[in-house]
Amino acid sequence: MIWLAIVGSAVATYLTRSLPFALTARPALPAAAARYFEALPVAIIAALVGPAVLAPGGALTLGPEPLAAAIVVATVAWRRSLLAGVIAGVAAVALLRLV
Amino acid sequence: MGEGWPVMGTTIVVGITFGVVARQAGLEPIEIAAMSLLIFAGASEFAMVRLFIEGAAAPVVIATVLFINLRHLLMAASLRPYFMRLAPARRLAAAFVLTDESFAMATSHFRRGGTSLAYYVTFAVALFVLWNLSTLAGIALGSTIGEPRRYGVDFAITATFLGIVVLAVRRPADVAVALVAAAFAGALALAGLSTIAVIVAGAFAPLLAVFARK
Image (tube, rainbow over all chains, first blue to last red; front, side, top):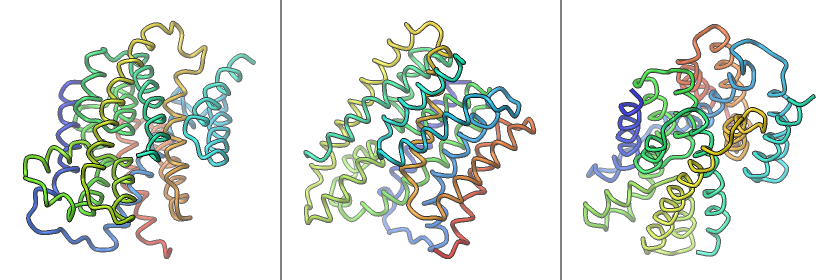
């Protein structure tokens, strides 16, 4: 099951990378579709965050996660660094779980 | 090439993080290594780990990855005039290493008046090698950390996603899209629909950007 997902995802990803190079004519996208595709990655990645922050154990909780998430957002917005945000977030969660 | 160092450094750190969290999630080293080798897309690989933890079926995983990567179609379409000078086999090989980072570097190179694809190929292949080596390092490291929750390591994946979203936001509409996607997916997960939460909320929220004025 995991291998099917890995190979299938690899094929799907390569198709998105190579399709415009395989076609002979340049594909034209309507402006609305271009806006949709531009916003799509942000939406999918944010959708991955939602459940992990709001319901880490499968139920609505006010645990360390929402506070740590706010710290990550603030750190990355301030420093413009993914690494700084991840370090701050992991440290915050580790500390908040101690108290 | 000098402006590429920060990107390479980030790639190494994120690659190690990926190896660690994937190992901690219970994936086998060979599965994790295959993901970085065959898929070579950071956000997608992290998303897959998250979905494997949720027990999502393969079609759901593949569909989610496809949606995350649809943006490559736009990047490839934009690079197409430069790539079409290559022979078909080389062109399709160069497409395999197309990422957000190599696209950004190639675009800035071409905007400065450059025409050589060697710049893109060198940088993209370097990132591919670094990503796979750092994934392997992360696998080795992840196998040695005993109790991930105690060190907050399990939160690294969520923190990575949050950081990617913050760095990707360019317009006010992006903020709305991100907030709606996160809240909608959270609500679906609370309703017991965690395996399809990401694809449903992720496909719905960009409609806000389509109908936003600016």
